[in-house]
Image 1 (tube, rainbow, N blue to C red):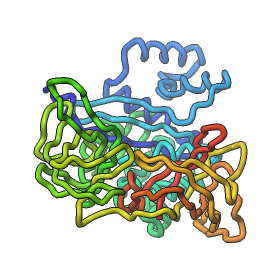
Image 2 (cartoon, rainbow, N blue to C red):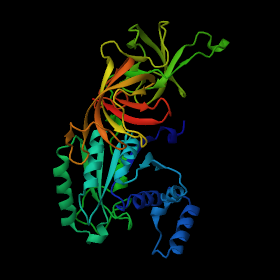
Image 3 (cartoon, rainbow, N blue to C red):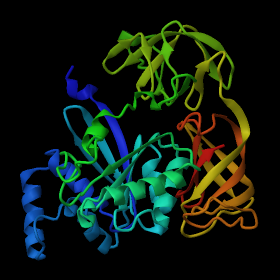
Length: 420
């Protein structure tokens, strides 16, 4: 088995105002970690020279998307993949404009780390606060504040300390567990992959060192066992005549062979007879592994059911209280409106019982008088569902605590929600 397949995967998202240098930073990470091909580098070198720019504009590595936007193609979130000997990475490059709140919610929902860029000349601005609030809402476990363009403020320790204190004072009101501050220059490469001689006063790690070494193994919930069944495997051939396995992706907890488990919604109990994976049998499994569970008893289990521990089950409910981010640009949320709701591997229909309030994303003020959620708005909503769902709060489990709403007429995803 190659080591490459077992390398840990880290997902991170970038956030910052327009022109804070997100594309340049990603370009610098890709270039300095030797994750681009020579012909890609030659190409952006040629375009930079043609534009009359000094040096090579690394932002062009990701800004090839801008040309596609000019052709009228809508691009929500640009994903980039690269790896180092220590880890594999997926970057969700989200747009910085105020009207793209929904894009940040999409890109950040699965992230382990959020990189928040702040222009050293401007300090903490409104957009910084908005992105920090969204990162807090989405329970992103680790936030790295990259104070960029340090070369434009003469690598001043005073400027860095001032931004550090400003951000920390604001973030004290938020629910973000792990903070880190790094002074960088994405353009010059200071403290991105290699340590900078210009910031002798900074004793912390480079950004790349942080990304390679930040502890993400415990970001998942290993306490509450949750296994949403995605597919029932019945091979129907002589070699596997009586094989009946339940395949899916583990959403929480640790399952071991011999564990007593319960199947929802039936409530029947059994024991784990076997755990199969693509690479063979396992004695135990944990998130985010994709596995097949075989039970000792012949129980009727189908897609949408959930296998849990007997003594630790999620809330089974038809009423959900959730924080929604509205995605639809054609029409706002409809009170008493009917939508399709998707939660883990379940799909049902729901009705909007009540919009409690709209949240001001800049001040965290709850606007009780305004219940009209337009595109990019966030608000608290009560939904009534046609059949019971097996839910946890989003704070407890990001997988079993999240939902999406789909317009039944157009099949467009109109909202993403976090269960409260």
